[in-house]
Length: 282
Length: 278
Image (tube, rainbow over all chains, first blue to last red; front, top):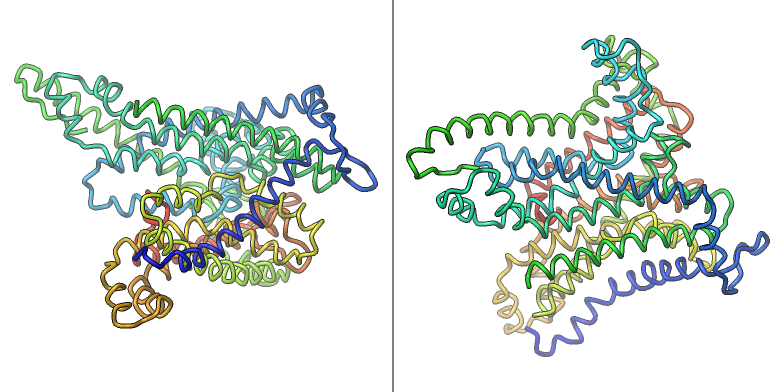
């Protein structure tokens, strides 16, 4: 099949190569390069090298707060997604239930509805007359509605909900590919349930955990719509900052510097992922 | 989970603790599913609410908000535009995805894994970065903004069409293509008359799933939509920044029904798991 197919294969790869190079990599490269350009109120940007954007980003209190808040929310979202996603993935990978297909579909279905639908669902749930407040008052936990919207908690809960499936899928792949006999062997040799989990199952799921965490962390760090609608102006994150800088002030160079932080975080995570993966093999 | 105790003394202890663990696991899994599905279910309930506020439980049953949706020309226009955009992006992403998938499966040999990872690149890049970069590029290069929006959607759909189609192609016996070519069919004719009919369900699934991805997207459209090309999620997003009446619930319920129906079709055809790569 491969003989004489070189030209044909090249032709088949042409459209995707063009699309990725021209419309994905080149624009992103140019946008990130913008971070070392000078901002000008008249021409928006001048191709003159400067480190001003990064200096401003790191020296102004306002932006430092946003960076740390973003990292904090991203880290918490990743941890909670893992804590909820692992039992779910474990259950889906090991269950013999005839409903497994349906249960799997129910994890994918919310994901397909899109970010805006799920964010709206949380607005309804967490509002002052929302279900959560109604239930808490009925249970007698609180006397009057508490304000949940426009707090960091609301943003966190919704982000965990929206991004958890991205954690479940790699975990599921990892867990489903493990031979159940390995766990049985550990049990036969006298290991308890917890010991089996921590010394057999968890280490074998490492690739899935790292992959899922990398995905959830990056996607949280880049979130705009959910923090904007659930957190309002009080829980501003990096994504919204970039959005505002571009759409209201047209300060492309500074927006690029902010985006650079996002990309830097992502590359660090991917680096850790690759390092972790290699250690697992070696 | 199912530890098979072989040593007699600990057997009874293990059985008791295993019952507790199973019960606890059941409660935990149920709670996680409630968490996953509650925001979607609540929207459907709210859409039939007769009152102005997003209260739950509903105080009655009314189709008032569906009427409001049908009367709102801006939401209807956005809905139509999203369907149009989704259809174009789906055809584009499936066509390009098919060509690349075929090349990945048949021609890359040992480098296949690397090729596939490269093809899935857009999943690993925050979508906001993709769309903001496209917007910047469009301020410099004279290219229609509508074109930018379409290409952006094709890019975010491609990883899913490629994952689905490569999975389908794995089920095709290469011998069939070789036989067609031995009998004198050109490579293109072999693709058209042998490969495409064999993976038709996979291609249809890719089309539908790409439509779903495009329809739900908010980040690409966040920077690239504009007058006359506002997608439904963007229309909802801008509406919600000012007010939040159950008309949004009615619209999103229509969206949920549409998406879940399409998702079920894909599930029947090839299985969603193949496309989500799980």
